[in-house]
Image (cartoon, rainbow, N blue to C red; front, side):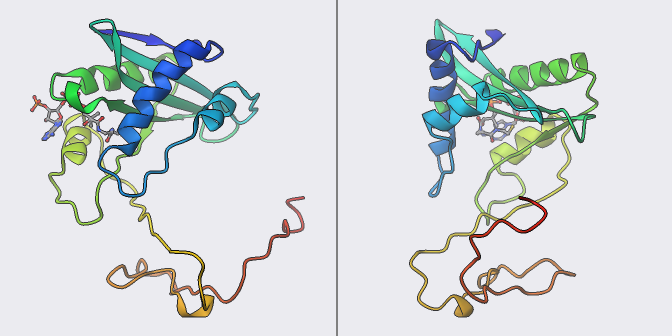
Length: 193
Ligand SMILES: CC(C)(COP(=O)(O)OP(=O)(O)OC[C@H]1O[C@@H](n2cnc3c(N)ncnc32)[C@H](O)[C@@H]1OP(=O)(O)O)[C@@H](O)C(=O)NCCC(=O)NCCS
Protein backbone atom coordinates (compact mmCIF):
# COMPACT_ATOMS: atom_id res chain seq x y z
CA UNK A 1 0.00 0.00 0.00
CA UNK A 2 1.16 3.52 -0.73
CA UNK A 3 0.51 6.24 1.87
CA UNK A 4 0.88 9.80 0.67
CA UNK A 5 -0.05 13.38 1.43
CA UNK A 6 -2.86 14.95 -0.54
CA UNK A 7 -2.41 18.22 -2.38
CA UNK A 8 -5.46 19.85 -0.79
CA UNK A 9 -5.62 22.48 -3.53
CA UNK A 10 -6.15 19.76 -6.15
CA UNK A 11 -9.90 19.01 -6.36
CA UNK A 12 -9.44 15.46 -7.64
CA UNK A 13 -6.99 14.48 -4.87
CA UNK A 14 -9.01 16.12 -2.10
CA UNK A 15 -12.21 14.52 -3.43
CA UNK A 16 -10.61 11.04 -3.27
CA UNK A 17 -9.70 11.72 0.39
CA UNK A 18 -13.20 13.07 1.08
CA UNK A 19 -15.06 10.11 -0.47
CA UNK A 20 -13.28 7.66 1.86
CA UNK A 21 -13.61 9.97 4.88
CA UNK A 22 -17.33 10.41 4.23
CA UNK A 23 -18.10 6.73 3.54
CA UNK A 24 -16.44 5.79 6.84
CA UNK A 25 -18.12 8.62 8.75
CA UNK A 26 -21.57 7.50 7.58
CA UNK A 27 -20.86 3.82 8.20
CA UNK A 28 -22.73 2.35 11.20
CA UNK A 29 -23.84 5.78 12.51
CA UNK A 30 -27.47 6.81 12.92
CA UNK A 31 -26.57 10.48 13.32
CA UNK A 32 -23.33 11.05 11.41
CA UNK A 33 -21.70 14.44 11.65
CA UNK A 34 -19.45 14.27 8.60
CA UNK A 35 -18.22 17.47 6.99
CA UNK A 36 -19.89 18.42 3.72
CA UNK A 37 -17.67 18.90 0.68
CA UNK A 38 -17.76 22.74 0.91
CA UNK A 39 -16.81 22.51 4.62
CA UNK A 40 -13.94 20.19 3.73
CA UNK A 41 -12.65 22.53 1.05
CA UNK A 42 -12.83 25.47 3.47
CA UNK A 43 -11.20 23.52 6.32
CA UNK A 44 -8.17 22.59 4.24
CA UNK A 45 -7.78 25.66 2.05
CA UNK A 46 -8.83 28.61 4.19
CA UNK A 47 -5.87 30.32 5.87
CA UNK A 48 -5.93 29.41 9.57
CA UNK A 49 -3.40 30.93 11.98
CA UNK A 50 -4.45 28.47 14.71
CA UNK A 51 -4.02 25.12 12.97
CA UNK A 52 -2.22 23.38 10.13
CA UNK A 53 -4.16 20.50 8.57
CA UNK A 54 -2.82 17.60 6.51
CA UNK A 55 -4.89 15.10 4.54
CA UNK A 56 -3.29 11.71 3.87
CA UNK A 57 -4.54 8.79 1.80
CA UNK A 58 -3.75 5.09 1.65
CA UNK A 59 -3.91 3.64 -1.85
CA UNK A 60 -4.16 0.01 -2.81
CA UNK A 61 -4.89 -1.67 -6.14
CA UNK A 62 -5.19 1.72 -7.82
CA UNK A 63 -7.86 3.07 -5.48
CA UNK A 64 -8.06 5.11 -2.28
CA UNK A 65 -8.93 2.79 0.61
CA UNK A 66 -7.97 4.81 3.70
CA UNK A 67 -7.92 8.46 4.74
CA UNK A 68 -6.30 10.30 7.65
CA UNK A 69 -6.48 13.86 8.87
CA UNK A 70 -3.84 15.44 11.08
CA UNK A 71 -4.42 18.78 12.77
CA UNK A 72 -1.37 20.52 14.23
CA UNK A 73 -2.33 23.28 16.68
CA UNK A 74 -0.01 26.25 16.17
CA UNK A 75 -0.90 28.54 19.08
CA UNK A 76 -1.74 26.18 21.95
CA UNK A 77 -1.05 22.51 22.69
CA UNK A 78 1.90 22.65 20.35
CA UNK A 79 3.16 19.34 21.75
CA UNK A 80 0.16 17.52 20.23
CA UNK A 81 -1.46 16.43 16.98
CA UNK A 82 -5.18 15.69 16.66
CA UNK A 83 -5.56 12.82 14.21
CA UNK A 84 -8.11 10.43 12.80
CA UNK A 85 -7.86 7.63 10.31
CA UNK A 86 -10.46 5.46 8.63
CA UNK A 87 -10.36 2.45 6.32
CA UNK A 88 -13.16 1.52 3.90
CA UNK A 89 -15.20 -1.30 5.49
CA UNK A 90 -14.34 -3.84 2.78
CA UNK A 91 -10.59 -3.27 3.28
CA UNK A 92 -10.44 -3.71 7.05
CA UNK A 93 -8.50 -6.35 9.04
CA UNK A 94 -5.54 -6.37 6.64
CA UNK A 95 -3.20 -4.13 8.57
CA UNK A 96 -4.12 -0.95 6.67
CA UNK A 97 -5.38 0.91 9.76
CA UNK A 98 -2.17 0.03 11.59
CA UNK A 99 -0.07 1.32 8.69
CA UNK A 100 -2.08 4.57 8.63
CA UNK A 101 -1.56 5.10 12.38
CA UNK A 102 2.17 4.34 12.04
CA UNK A 103 2.25 7.05 9.38
CA UNK A 104 0.42 9.49 11.68
CA UNK A 105 2.92 8.81 14.46
CA UNK A 106 5.84 9.28 12.08
CA UNK A 107 4.47 12.55 10.73
CA UNK A 108 3.80 13.78 14.28
CA UNK A 109 7.38 12.99 15.33
CA UNK A 110 8.78 14.70 12.27
CA UNK A 111 6.77 17.81 13.19
CA UNK A 112 8.27 17.71 16.70
CA UNK A 113 5.02 16.67 18.39
CA UNK A 114 5.08 14.14 21.20
CA UNK A 115 1.38 13.34 21.73
CA UNK A 116 -1.21 12.01 19.27
CA UNK A 117 -4.83 12.59 20.28
CA UNK A 118 -7.31 10.52 18.28
CA UNK A 119 -11.06 10.09 18.39
CA UNK A 120 -12.93 6.79 18.15
CA UNK A 121 -16.70 6.78 17.64
CA UNK A 122 -18.76 3.83 18.87
CA UNK A 123 -22.34 3.22 20.08
CA UNK A 124 -23.11 4.46 23.60
CA UNK A 125 -23.74 0.93 24.89
CA UNK A 126 -20.88 -0.71 22.99
CA UNK A 127 -18.82 -3.21 24.89
CA UNK A 128 -15.22 -2.61 25.95
CA UNK A 129 -14.12 -4.83 23.06
CA UNK A 130 -15.85 -2.79 20.32
CA UNK A 131 -13.59 -3.18 17.24
CA UNK A 132 -12.60 0.48 17.01
CA UNK A 133 -11.74 0.65 20.72
CA UNK A 134 -9.86 -2.66 20.42
CA UNK A 135 -7.92 -1.24 17.49
CA UNK A 136 -6.91 1.94 19.33
CA UNK A 137 -5.92 0.01 22.46
CA UNK A 138 -3.94 -2.52 20.45
CA UNK A 139 -1.90 0.36 18.99
CA UNK A 140 -1.09 1.70 22.45
CA UNK A 141 -3.66 4.47 22.85
CA UNK A 142 -5.26 4.97 26.26
CA UNK A 143 -8.75 6.35 26.78
CA UNK A 144 -8.65 9.84 28.22
CA UNK A 145 -11.97 11.55 27.58
CA UNK A 146 -15.47 10.36 26.64
CA UNK A 147 -18.08 12.53 24.97
CA UNK A 148 -21.73 11.56 24.57
CA UNK A 149 -23.38 12.60 21.31
CA UNK A 150 -26.92 13.56 22.39
CA UNK A 151 -29.88 14.04 20.07
CA UNK A 152 -32.77 16.44 20.64
CA UNK A 153 -35.63 16.50 18.15
CA UNK A 154 -36.74 19.99 17.14
CA UNK A 155 -38.85 21.98 17.64
CA UNK A 156 -38.70 21.89 21.45
CA UNK A 157 -42.13 22.76 22.93
CA UNK A 158 -40.95 23.69 26.41
CA UNK A 159 -37.17 24.02 26.69
CA UNK A 160 -37.29 24.10 30.50
CA UNK A 161 -38.62 20.51 30.48
CA UNK A 162 -35.62 19.18 28.62
CA UNK A 163 -32.65 18.24 30.77
CA UNK A 164 -29.40 18.23 28.84
CA UNK A 165 -28.60 14.85 30.43
CA UNK A 166 -31.22 12.36 29.24
CA UNK A 167 -32.64 9.35 31.09
CA UNK A 168 -29.92 6.90 32.01
CA UNK A 169 -27.23 9.35 30.95
CA UNK A 170 -26.45 11.05 34.23
CA UNK A 171 -24.23 14.11 34.18
CA UNK A 172 -20.66 13.47 35.22
CA UNK A 173 -20.10 13.42 38.99
CA UNK A 174 -19.07 16.84 40.17
CA UNK A 175 -20.99 18.66 37.44
CA UNK A 176 -24.32 20.22 38.38
CA UNK A 177 -27.34 18.98 36.44
CA UNK A 178 -28.03 21.59 33.77
CA UNK A 179 -31.30 22.52 32.15
CA UNK A 180 -32.09 24.78 29.24
CA UNK A 181 -33.79 27.70 30.94
CA UNK A 182 -34.88 29.43 27.77
CA UNK A 183 -33.87 30.30 24.25
CA UNK A 184 -30.14 30.74 23.77
CA UNK A 185 -28.98 34.28 23.18
CA UNK A 186 -27.79 34.90 19.66
CA UNK A 187 -25.58 37.78 20.73
CA UNK A 188 -21.83 37.33 20.89
CA UNK A 189 -20.73 37.77 24.53
CA UNK A 190 -18.93 41.02 25.27
CA UNK A 191 -15.19 40.40 25.21
CA UNK A 192 -15.42 37.93 22.33
CA UNK A 193 -16.57 40.53 19.81
C1 LIG B 1 -10.47 1.22 13.32
C2 LIG B 1 -10.04 0.98 11.87
C3 LIG B 1 -9.21 2.18 11.37
C4 LIG B 1 -9.17 -0.29 11.82
O1 LIG B 1 -8.68 -0.46 10.49
P1 LIG B 1 -8.12 -1.90 10.03
O2 LIG B 1 -7.43 -1.70 8.72
O3 LIG B 1 -9.21 -2.91 10.06
O4 LIG B 1 -7.06 -2.22 11.19
P2 LIG B 1 -5.96 -3.36 11.24
O5 LIG B 1 -6.23 -4.41 10.21
O6 LIG B 1 -4.63 -2.68 11.16
O7 LIG B 1 -6.19 -3.96 12.70
C5 LIG B 1 -5.20 -3.92 13.71
C6 LIG B 1 -5.71 -4.61 14.95
O8 LIG B 1 -6.80 -3.87 15.54
C7 LIG B 1 -7.74 -4.80 16.11
N1 LIG B 1 -8.98 -4.77 15.34
C8 LIG B 1 -9.22 -4.09 14.19
N2 LIG B 1 -10.47 -4.35 13.76
C9 LIG B 1 -11.02 -5.20 14.64
C10 LIG B 1 -12.29 -5.84 14.75
N3 LIG B 1 -13.26 -5.65 13.80
N4 LIG B 1 -12.52 -6.67 15.78
C11 LIG B 1 -11.58 -6.88 16.73
N5 LIG B 1 -10.33 -6.31 16.68
C12 LIG B 1 -10.06 -5.48 15.66
C13 LIG B 1 -7.10 -6.17 15.98
O9 LIG B 1 -6.29 -6.37 17.11
C14 LIG B 1 -6.26 -6.00 14.72
O10 LIG B 1 -5.19 -6.92 14.64
P3 LIG B 1 -5.43 -8.39 14.02
O11 LIG B 1 -6.17 -8.22 12.74
O12 LIG B 1 -4.04 -8.91 13.86
O13 LIG B 1 -6.23 -9.14 15.04
C15 LIG B 1 -11.28 0.76 10.96
O14 LIG B 1 -12.11 -0.22 11.54
C16 LIG B 1 -12.09 2.02 10.75
O15 LIG B 1 -11.86 2.75 9.79
N6 LIG B 1 -13.04 2.31 11.66
C17 LIG B 1 -13.85 3.53 11.57
C18 LIG B 1 -13.06 4.78 11.94
C19 LIG B 1 -12.32 4.67 13.26
O16 LIG B 1 -12.88 4.27 14.28
N7 LIG B 1 -11.04 5.05 13.24
C20 LIG B 1 -10.17 4.97 14.42
C21 LIG B 1 -9.99 6.30 15.05
S1 LIG B 1 -8.54 7.16 14.58
